[in-house]
Image (cartoon, rainbow, N blue to C red; front, top):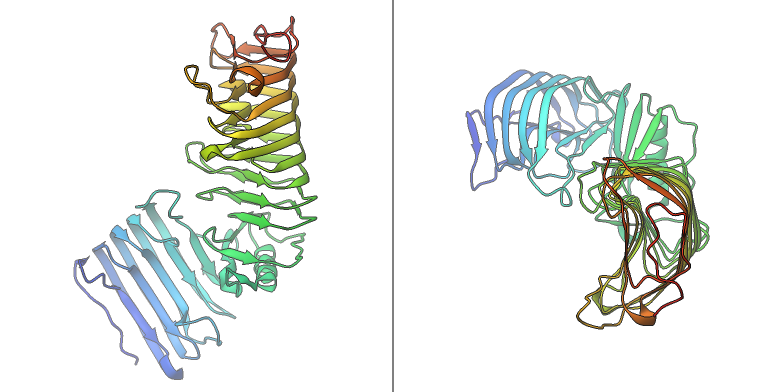
Length: 477
């Protein structure tokens, strides 16, 4: 029988940062490992690298079975629950069988990217793994850590193959150094996620790494009803087509597209908590000739953010909310030069967003935002429907990003803030010029009087707009 290391105390941790409650490692050097009927309960872990851990070597044989961890308290541990049959690296086959393992009543905080890490080998993997009454929260800010489940070939009653699977692209050979071709690894990860049986598969892509891909296709139909992807960032991908994916709870922007020509994004579902900061749905920059259509986006920040260097973009049939709406900008940050033009948003619905249509620029920036249109927009209890904000300081004349040839046409629905229409622009030709409002009918969702506030916004009058139009006639004064 192989030696089993168990640190059997009631409390663990301290300066040594121990890896505690460890079964294994078993099967080293092709040996036989046999461990059974091990029960750990009513224990505390503080500042440890791991909490409950089982690890076996590749090429070993034997079994680990009848193991239980119960009523465990965690205080800023790294990985709370771990089974690793590929210790120390992912390569050879594994024969040690891990079965009848339970983690019950595990509560507290984790600092790791993967709070629960179950990586099992084939063909049987880990069987009869039970996770019950698990409540692990992040000890770090959301933008720095993800409490993600990582399961590979693991049959469990908590996140089982028949209900959902979570797969990390690096487990299929992706390197993420920006130099290695990770195309085949992504294809393998996608095939695994797509072929998994159950209601949901999660394909996890680490936002902290840069993955280099050649043209690769992710196609269905899939066994899983839904395939969720954490985050995607595309750089210099001409002709990019992305469709039919779900992205869920990334700690930062979910999709980034930069320096691409002719990209098409469609039929995407992107979700994150409404109070999660910096979780834009789609961020685009330095690109042209793009289409985004038929997407459902619900996040804690912009549903779509259109940034510097962007031109000829058509966005349509977007369902946005909660979130910050579809925004152009911020432009001109750090006194930089910005250029955005020919942006067209249409046939979209905003529900309980902070803004709907929004253009925002920084003081002391330069450049332009021009030929921008929002048409046929449905508003459902948004805070502010139409916003232009040039960060204008009325006491100091400063250079500004010029905003011109902007139209808001066919806005219908309800808002909750009195200033449902707000356009705060700089003075003179560098303010907002040729601003058109037409067929605007916005009512209060809370029974208050709505107003339009304009400062140095210039364009043709709209006598039938509600709230009443406030732009000044002419291009500028």
